[in-house]
Image 1 (cartoon, rainbow, N blue to C red):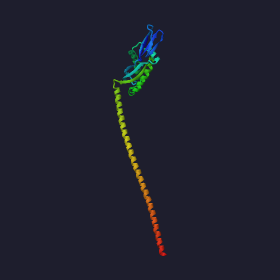
Image 2 (image 1 turned 180 degrees about the horizontal axis):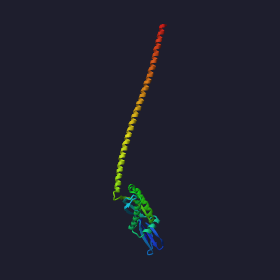
Image 3 (image 1 turned 90 degrees about the horizontal axis):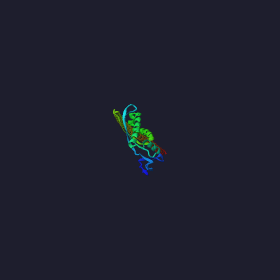
Image 4 (image 1 turned 135 degrees about the horizontal axis):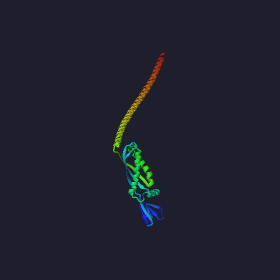
Length: 248
């Protein structure tokens, strides 16, 4: 008889003429009653709250971290599905989730122990990427893929993070004050430069005007000399003509 399953589960048929067992993810398969048996395994995505309480970081500061991970048995990859069936066949979703959770939590703790509080606090993306990478390489051997991992919360009981937050706030305020002072300074420099350029332009304009006035006066003086010279020459010629007429 035929058995079917949806895309969120896989069927494994074993027994007579089924060696190795046949795995079907999202489909149907023919099963001989009594001499063959069928088992199902969930392919649903599981959301896990990965909590690590009071883990000592690299510098000996205990903190608690909560991450959110989504994992699922990979039904589209035959090798991974075979590994998952070998590990989890006959187990419930809760049992599968528990095993995956313990694995993730162990890797989360290990990475916390190799990082400082400052590194985890200031660069959550880096921490999340490291947990995702290490956990993925381990869970893949169980046929489980890590869909996502995100650092949800980080806290401590000694106000260490609060002090970091205050220090960070103070630094931000300091940077803001420095930025404001630098902006005012730059604005003052630009204003002074603009005034200097304006004065320089005005000075150059006055120089050009003075040069033009000088050139005008020089040309006018040369013209006046030329006019007076010609006038004098004309007067002299006239006087010579008059004297010549008188003597003649």
